Length: 417
Figure 1 (cartoon, rainbow, N blue to C red):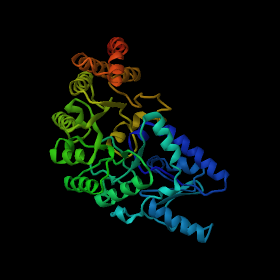
Figure 2: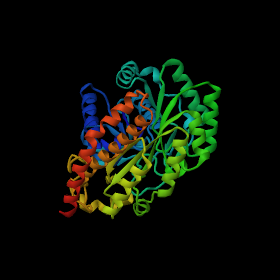
Figure 3: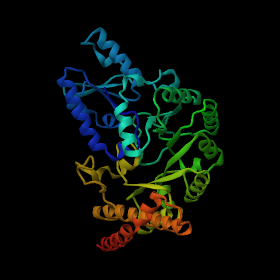
Figure 4: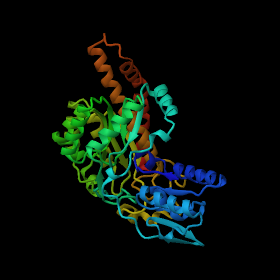
């Protein structure tokens, strides 16, 4: 069973690589005499491709109940007709056959706790501690996203959103902490903490269990501009939050149907920093209608607000949302970045593909230069602080500063090309 239950930043940035890995796993499974079922966003979008690579079926929508019924059917009859089981796509000759749709599970708490005892966690712990000095685990507290950004594909849950109870999430954390001595959690929810009352109960539960765990989340800007959201998050142990800022130009935010404002980005960043939470921005360049002024507004916003981290991508068309429908005619045979080049637009943008690759480098250089100068100011004010991280960041300015100037000149030439 190949299962990808999250459509987070990593999977969006590595679709073609993940797909090739999935095909390899399908091959390994078939060579071992196994029946292979795949449940993922990419498999939902490209059913025929996975079935032609010898997957027995694609599980559409949520996978747990469907997979359970598939296993029961095969256990009683290895040649069972699976077309009657809801939530499957199968290959019959050259045609894809869809079984009846599977209803969404509205109460995630009815699912049993993940079988962590079946996972060999020691290698993961060793890798984390060796490279980061602590151990982080991945969990989810919710499913789906009720918002409708024009570029966001949601083939598993659609616009639905369902939460585990805060009590269930705290229980899972307490069980994991008892059996595995981890220090950090990466909540992979598309949106963590949509409701203020849920967050208050979550923070209360952690305090009652005396669980001291730092965690990282993804959340919406407009939610994080509200103290009633940020305060319980900070009380619960929030370490870092990644926000989908995407652009510093209100015009582009509105075109994406983000439902947020630039001012809310400023408010959220201020609230989070005041609460001692690290702030990270997702940025997206190349959206339809974006011009040089819009790009500059994004760069200016980053330099002005000084987030702790940034992640940069270009707009990437995935089947389903309105953005894909708008640019589909330009894609031709291109289906992923192996067809167009890493960080290259797959459709006609305002600038050339090379421009956006250079822009990625330029923004990172400017960002690192600004962070280095800030670290240098801190060290000059308090020279007795021998903080290695500050010293490294400040010293790196000697590299990033000149590199930013060079990349800026290259961008200017590409703008005129």
